[in-house]
Image 1 (tube, rainbow, N blue to C red):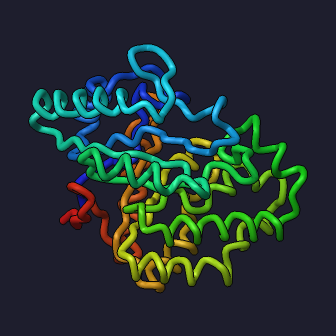
Image 2 (image 1 turned 90 degrees about the vertical axis):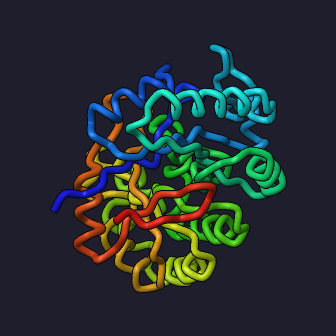
Length: 283
């Protein structure tokens, strides 16, 4: 069965860790790949302890503090221009917010003042260390027991969900990306007994769960989340799912999307897209 192909996690050149690829170039590539709909999700990192490291976006070729809304005006202007130019592609405006306790008011201010279609929430840092980073994550994992990781990660996830600020949660078991190497297979089951009530809360709030394919290009066997977590999400009542490549370059766009869509179908789950933060199933 053929699927309507979407990619709801793309980092254009506004994200400081992305290659300098413009929105229009992703749109051209998306049409070549026969994607029907894409969503740009520029990083917004808000940990004040890391203010001098990653509280930035790239705008007009320079690093700009994420708190300066000039970049948002430019971002939306570029997206609107792309929407007008690429009529055969649905193009949506999104964010990926790296959640940090205390950032809620600023996130609310951003999403209240701009017409976003989709707001992803993500955990990238624990104890102010980027567990999403190949170079930084060892500093966390080497000094943190598995029980402590479990407690800190899922406490942060629960906090993020209960803010109600996010439409969808990105790569929910991201700790596997580099943590598997340090903790071994025991890390594969740390979600058991703690993720279920969080998923139930997501279902109650109608928050979606992303199937993020970036794990595959990093050598993991499963997506984020692994199939067991997807099944637990469905059992808890989550019905909204998205698929995203987490592309930071043109070559990563659309990667493994067909497999992710097939997995959702195997589990009788439905891919969704968003317009002005309202989820719509992809039929």
